[in-house]
Length: 277
Image (cartoon, rainbow, N blue to C red; front, side, top):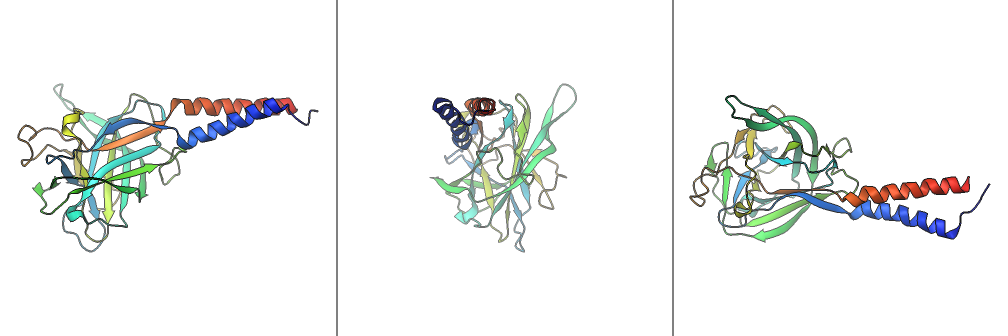
């Protein structure tokens, strides 16, 4: 039985394994990105559940559509938003869900809505200043009405986990299927009456073709929600009024090289075991 392997083989094994680990810990790429509208036409749309005793408005959850380009886990999530009067809740929790795409309709007209809940998690932290903007509209689509106040500070919430999970209760990442359409839903849960608004996508950057939607819920995480389209309200550029709204978020997946490098590392490990047998 061989007790030792040649130094060159040992170096290759270590290099392969280390490369796999490094790749898994750092190599992600953005596969879906809708950046926020930082102009005066940007709208921050209420996406808050008031869990405390102060409930100044209805509990609203928002969702927007995305189409997967990859098979495998979503390894990162970013979204942008503002707080009414620029007053945030330091203990805010974000309930995030991924839902199937439900298409229904008659006469050749299809209506797309969030369907079955496929995955959910609760996220905390992750915020950083992103931009100072002109005064933007803070809008409650369920009323519908503008909520008076200042909101000139856009924040970015960034959640990344290199192992492919961003905090799911099950500890398992959402596994997407390439070419499949999903919905991302987000709702901030606050305890002191603070109101979070999810930012609209940069209008000049393009449109997805399907409107983001809103719904109201009576309990956190409820799936009994009737979603409705969101269209730009009066108060923005006239050319935008009545047009479908997109929300600002981005998704990351592992680099294709990550899996390949890890496989090389595993092959090298098997080679070592065979060599020392």
